[in-house]
Length: 168
Image 1 (cartoon, rainbow, N blue to C red):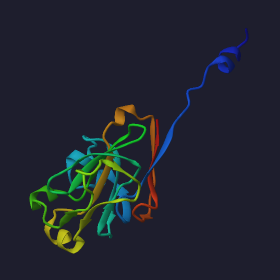
Image 2 (tube, rainbow, N blue to C red):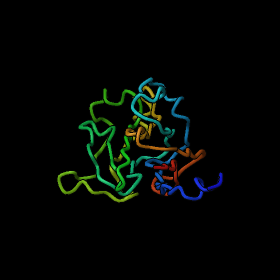
Image 3 (cartoon, rainbow, N blue to C red):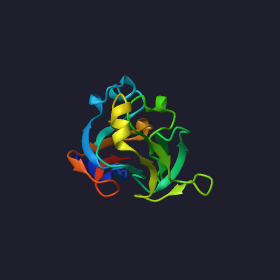
Image 4 (tube, helix red, strand yellow):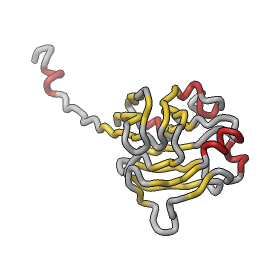
């Protein structure tokens, strides 16, 4: 055996790549700039945030909705290959008790969702006035199962443009 035998005989593990698309239109910002330690310090996971310009939040992937908060400011979703995402509109928006948010997705019917399907409609002008911040974090909550994340930058359109590539 020579030095290259181990290299050529190793079975390569197949890397699975999943694209996550923008749940809301706006500009991607670094998660570290979100004015809440839970997100900026990556306590709930890693990802990006969006400074929104749109008034709808859509599913960023094909998957299964785990929970939509009663206040409609946040929801969790799991991709078909078990990547867990948490989408949270704004900071301290839970204190608005649902004002400014209208749920469009009926969890009583099904929890299966397609990329681009509307989950929540929002009154962006109201929320700009009432929320501490409208930055919208999108985080991978089961980050320990992820090998690598590619984070996109720039302006994005909800349901169209990718924001993250997950290597699992």
